[in-house]
Length: 452
Image (cartoon, rainbow, N blue to C red; front, side):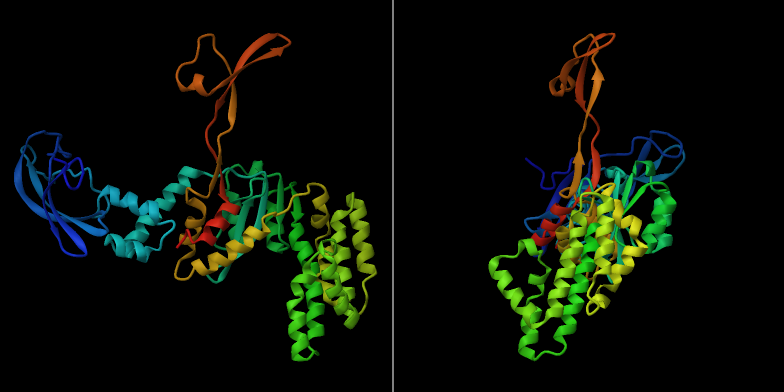
């Protein structure tokens, strides 16, 4: 007959249904094999002690296991030991399978919900989570990217530096601070810094100072999205200035048009043009600000770096004085970040995950209420559904004898001609390479409520 608990080293004696939980009495099956002090193998019984352990829920109810755990005394040295319980966790009053159950679910469910379900204090669940997160971080070992993105998210009331693998569109790490000292300490300890060839960043001076110090000689690119966003912000300041002197009805209408004005002119439909031209006729300064925004965007459509630099200089010199103050931040950035902005033409990469990032930021802020940064970081980075991995192939020279087992089944043989003759090689799966949390998957899971 199948034992109720289905634990190999325990035997169920009785089970009592107490409404919201089962109370199971069990007994162990093993005795100590040798004394840990003297190595002697002779023992005799020395009483017992009742101990309680929580187990995984059964039939939707908590499970409490009580064991009269036997004690033994060594016949040689007199040391007393408890009978071994391999099914129990070595650190906590819980079965090993309950610890695994909590680990599987703690990345997507709240500690309070898990506590109510399994009957373990939420502080204990937090400790289990901390151990699990530390272990996962060691196991995954995300590969240091060749194109490193540095951005930020506001989480739990503070700005946090977010590092991304731009080529793989994956979150490489999330740091507790974006301050220069914290970034310096992190990057100095980063393994394989030599992998980094390009650093793409928002225009935050500490990022640039850190990159120049830690990655000397590497290409630094001011993220295109951050630069063009400043043009949108200049137009938006002009629109808000105009709204101040309008009646309530017109002010509300103009507010609703802001997303239309963010569109590129080439993306406006004929109906869109009718609407914006009406506003431009009423407020010429708004039309000038929109055209200034569009003309700056054209900077990134120039064929060469030199052409883009000339276009930006011309753009700044021809700004209408009536709207020039609204684009002051962008003009200052063109001067202070000139090299980094136009380094885009040396390597045209960008943090191309803007839409995903907006979704992630919104859902993280909602999800972050009541949680520490460390918990949120682990949830975002280490859930198995979001980790982006690859198993690259490795070309190996084939020996004369036929490989056996899986190597032969999954490898691809090919003959390669060289100057010294023909050699036979095979492509075999290499070790798994982890890149980080896939941003599009992460955004979708957050939207679906996967992380409660």
